[in-house]
Length: 233
Image 1 (cartoon, rainbow, N blue to C red):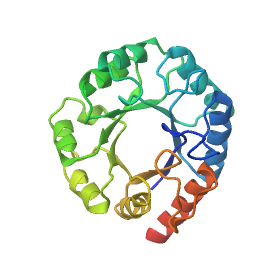
Image 2: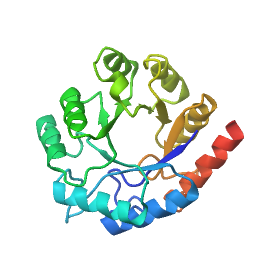
Image 3: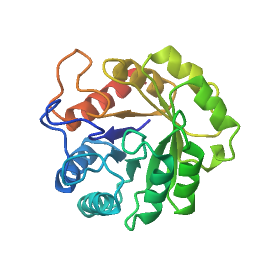
């Protein structure tokens, strides 16, 4: 069982002062979480205004900075509709990247997900399918993409039982990674690890530790998850 670090998401510095935004900050954070034991990172590049973007210049700079700082560390980018509401624009953006990430996450609850997956696969980029309901898992099972994925993301607001309900529908042989949000992060991480799955933590998902204290940074979240996994297994 491994831990992936989600470094920033749509968070702002107003929410937490340690949220990394620039390519240099993301590279430094990626270096730190890798040393703490993370096997991969998931990041949301920002433009010059600090706004999430799929623009090639910003995404290429972000991936290049992390690769230079931590060679060999798998890097994932988001394709969420919170970045751009137009699924056709998101698919087109992927094709313009010149320093592509190792994988992208694609949320099956969002309109146009199949076209975005197709664009990523055609560009030689791996795909994580984000599943936040049993219905998403059914959609995946009936799609032509299930066994072409890097993994399925079981990502829930509702906690462990919701995660288990989704996981039961994920096609056999598709690797799973579980994560929650806020305080539910920790119960989902423990249950996912106990079931033998990879997990995810980071400032994108939760600002708090299991005891309710605000985490210092992504490193503290990763080290806490690794300790929790050890206890759960």
